[in-house]
Structures are given as C-alpha cells and as structure tokens.
Length: 208
Image 1 (cartoon, rainbow, N blue to C red):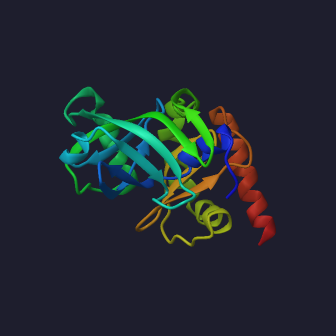
Image 2 (cartoon, rainbow, N blue to C red):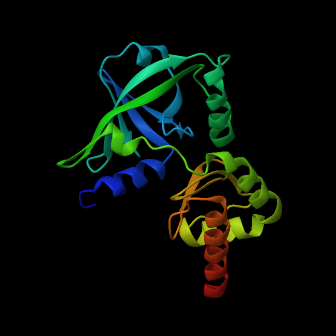
C-alpha cells in the first residue's frame, strides 16, 4: 500500500472496527467503534488504562498498518457517556473486558506521512438519521444489503444487519465480524444516503 494522504487515512480509520493496541511492551487485539462526535470507544483492560504509551495499529500490527497514537480516558457505563457502550454492543456483542474508555487520538502516521488529531476526529453528519436509516435498511432491504456486501466486501452474509452509516459508507454486521461497504460518493444527508444506496444497489443488480 502506498502512503496515505489525510483523506485516505480518515477513510481507513472509519473503514475498520478492529486493531491491535500496544500498551507499554504488550500487544492485544481490540474491537472499537467510532462515536457520533468522531471519538473512538472500546472496552479495555485496567492495565491499558494505566499505560502512558498506547498505539492503535489498524487493522493489525503489521508493517503497513495505520499507527494511531491514543490516550485512554476511562468512563463509566452508567454515566451519560455510557450510551456509546451500547453502540459498541450493537456492532460487536458482549465485551470480554468490562472497563470502558475513549481512545482519544493524539496523532497518526502511515509510513512517512503524519496526521494530526483534527484531521481524523470528525463528527458524523448522518448521526441524527443513523438509527432510522439502519432500521429501514434492515426491515425492508435485507436482500439489498446481502448484495452490497457480496459485491463490495466480497463476503456472503446470510443475515446481514446494518449497524452504522457515515458519509463514507455503511457498516454491516455478519455472524462473527463487521464489514465495510464504502459509498461510491459522499453522503452528507439522509436524502444523499437514500439516493447513493439505491444507486449502488441498482448497479450491483445490473452487474449480476
């Protein structure tokens, strides 16, 4: 993979929900989600919270990964912030770790390219419409979701569940993993989402 520019790095971050978290000399795979304000959230170990050097390698710790320097900030699930824990469960199920944290981005790099936090932490323009759009797709367009995943993510999902949408694409949960279907053009409103997803579905059907 050639070096990313800032837009590619942001799309890469949004396009994944797993990574390897390095804390001190340890490395552990984690699953994360991105909240409506653009912050990363994940269940974590206590030892991760105590570390002063934490790096999230996306999608895993390999030579060509996106390296995101993060600072972990604990929050309680019973607090007002706890709603993001429910979002994580919608994506990934029940967590193994019981402590919750924001993984605040301090910066990132890919190869020789370096990105600051402002470039990667962006609010989701579709947040207020997300639940409605997902419900509509899951209730009325399950076949379309299957077709989109097969065509764009090269995975056949028997019972797909759309769990998220943002301007760059949709997230679809399968039996064991969450898959990304990138939008063919940015979606900045619910109307954009309807138009783009409809056009993508028609293109897939025409290609069959």
